[in-house]
Amino acid sequence: MGYIVFIRTYVFIFEFNIIKQILMASYRYFEEYDQPVTDTLIENYSKILHTVGEDISRDGIVKTPERAAKAMQFLTSGNCQDPAEILKSAMFAEAYHDMVIIKDIELYSLCEHHILPFFGKAHIAYIPDGHIVGLSKIPRVVDIFARRLQVQERLTHDILECINDTLKPKGVAVVIEASHMCMMMRGVQKQNSVTTTSGFRGQFEAIETRNEFLKLISSDLG
Ligand SMILES: [Zn+2]
Image (cartoon, rainbow, N blue to C red):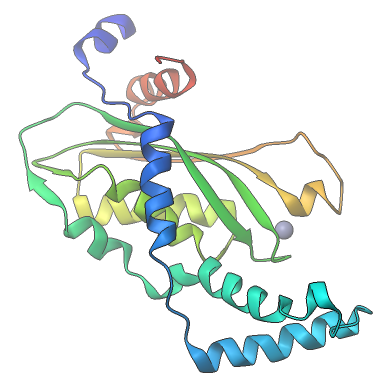
C-alpha cells in the first residue's frame, strides 16, 4: 500500500546546491544598517569586550565592536521582515494535488538563551489545495524565522503555521535537525548530538502520509 502511494506521488526535490545558491544570493543583498542602532551596539560591544579583559585598542580588535554590531543586526534582521508577505508575493493558482518536498534547506539561527548559534537543515513539505508557491520562497521563510533569537521548537512551529495560514494547503510538514553550539562549546559539551523537531498539519497528521514524507526525506534520491 505504502509502495503504491509512493509510486503515485510525484515529488519535486530540489537539491542542496540550488537551495544554497538561493540563500547565498539573499545574504549578499543585506547591506542596510540603522546608524543609531549600530552606534548603540558598538558602544555596548566595546563595554562587553573591555569587561571580559580585552584591550579594545589593539589592532585586531579595534574594529570588532563595529563588525559585531553589523553581524548582530544581520542575524536578527528577520524581526523586521514579514514571511507571510514573501509567500503571498509568489502564490499561483495550480491544480497540483501531490506532495511537494524541499529538503536539506540550510539554516542558521541564534539560541535565545545563550545568543549562540544553532544550525542544521530543514525539510519541508506541503500538499497544495488550489495554490502552489514559488519554491525559492520556502527557504526565505526559513531564513526570516531563523534570523532572530529563537528556540528550535518555536522555529519549527513558526515555519509550519506561516505556511499553513498563508498558503492554506491540504497539509504541511516541517522537520528540523540542528546542532546547538550552547550544548557543544559549553554546558554538557556533547559535540555529536543533533536535536530533531517536527510539526505536522492537515493530511500529514495521517500516519500513512507522514511516514511517506519521513521516508522520502531520509532517502538519498540524488
Ligand atoms: Zn542555548
